[in-house]
Length: 185
Image 1: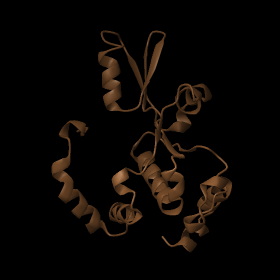
Image 2: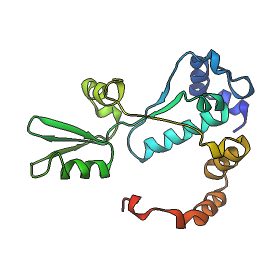
Image 3: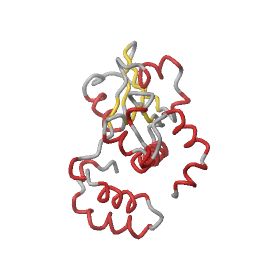
Image 4: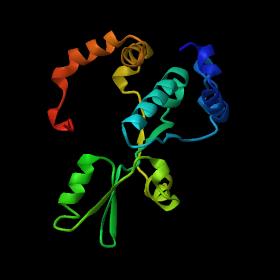
């Protein structure tokens, strides 16, 4: 999107103003009002899509923020497992299976699935995503091999741009690199 179109979006304009560091060539991380910018979305596919769009925005508009390690992604749970008085949170299906086969092995487990962050009560939200003592964050970085902005910009354009053929070709060319054990099917 063009800079004018991005600035015309009220939410993006508010976000940029609140951060205080400017955008594109005017981005100066010294003026950033916060040490950590944390993207927090639902733990489902829609939330992942929103997080991807926001990370794309930060890379394109505030790359210095990403480069200097200020951007994080919160990892809210998808499940709450309870057996008796013991409860644990699982971030995804694989983590749920791990908890069921270790901590909750042989126990009758009640599994609750969160449809979104809005379903959590304040205590659950504090325990899982807000408290620095118990939350899980992933720092969003640019790998060293992608430090050249042109290479990253090209990759982002392939994956997030308007041309679906670019995404199709990217997937086709890398299909052999997929670790089949990582696919939840």
